[in-house]
Length: 273
Image (cartoon, rainbow, N blue to C red; front, top):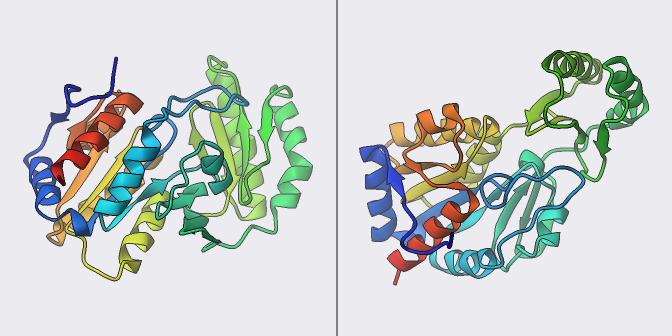
C-alpha cells in the first residue's frame, strides 16, 4: 500500500467535514497535533525502535511552513523523536505526554522531573518479581517516566497483578500509572488532555481549526480538548488511526494506520496550494 491521494479518508461526522473545510479556508491559523506510536509509525516490540516512513519529514516540514502550528504529542521523549529524524525546523514536540516541549531548537520542561523516580528505580524489580514478570523489560531512557514492557499475550491475571503492584508503587511515590501497548508507565500526573489544552491556550492567536490524530485510549484525553474547543465554536477534527473501538466511536475522520495518517497529511498539504 502506498500513501497517496487515493488513500481512503472516511469522514464519520459533519463536524469533521466542516473542520476540513475550515483548514482549507485558513491554514495559516490551523493547528495539527499528532500522536506517534500507532499513528505515525507502527507499534513495535520493545526494545526495537520503530521505522518511520521517510516521507513524513518533508510533509511535516511543509505543514510547519503552511500552518499556524504543526507538531507531535507523544509519550516518546524528544530525544527519541529526534533519533527518528523528525525534528525539523519549527516542529513542536510535546514529549513524554507534555513534560518536554521542543520548538526551534529549544527544549524546555514545563513539568518538573519527579524526585521519587529514584524510589521507583529501587523497587521496580521487586514489584515485577512479585507479579511473576521478573523478565519484563524496564525502559529508563525517559527523563520523567519509567516504562515496564511485557510480552504480548501475557496472561491477563498476571497483567492485572502487575498493574496492581505498579499502582501501589505509584501511590507510594506520588506518581500515576499510564497503560499502553503491552507497557505500563510510571510518571508524574500528566495526560494528553492537560498538555494539549496548555499548548492551545498558549498560542498567541485564535486557531481556525485544531486537528488531533491518535490510535489508543490515552488519545481520548486529547479528544476531550477538541470537544471543549468545538463547544466554544472552534472547528476541530478528531482523527482515529486504528481499530480501537473507543477511539473510532469518538472520531470525526478514520484513516488506516501510519500510512493513512501520512496520506491525510499529504492531502492537507495539497489543500494549501
